Length: 278
Image (cartoon, rainbow, N blue to C red; front, side, top):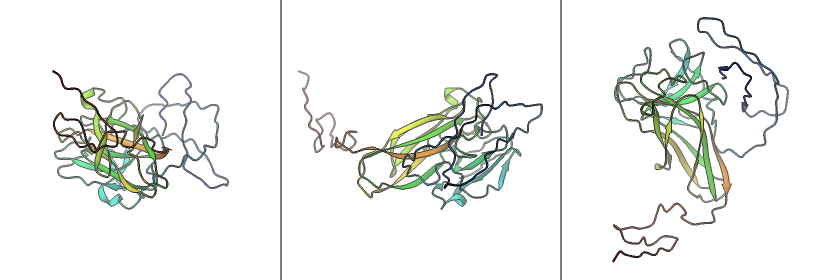
């Protein structure tokens, strides 16, 4: 979905879903249903082939998650929780007191799901028409098998909001304190803290630990914003895991040396020296 929010022409790039060779229809359709007149101007349309980048994630743009049967303020369709499992991703369920009437409020909220915008109530998805969402400490996971040993990178688009915002409406609650926080995890281990904030989607990249050929791992997006009355919300879209290159330096992230207090680490792939203060 695209929101035309400037008086000047701006180049917009959209990655289309993979398609076999053939004939297809491409349509530009207005979806704004709020009051008042709205007009968009379109020019210089181009369709270019993008070389396959070897993305290992199944349905990283969440377009294949089936029917979304719930509605939020008549302007967003969504589905929540484990009912979405089995389509390449697993989603955590709501815990208690989740309230979606006029916003997202409640206590002890930890849920994840998929939503699509019908006009004006969430940050419009960039890769296709849907995006995944995290309420509070909600969790989202996918399993990836690495065909070659070496180093891979996970990249995604993210946006966030809070304070009763309805699926993180762009431009709402710009305060740093209102941003949604999450951890990217690798087989349950936190490897990168991320802070999502408005307005709009921003690109994020995280380098994964080196893997062996054929290794399988679970990559997660796990909310860490806590639980409160007006829940913080994160939106995730266009998740990709791609090959970077062979691992040349063993244990370059210094995650596994044996340490004890302030002594020099031992048992690691590298060697360490230290000089004590006299």
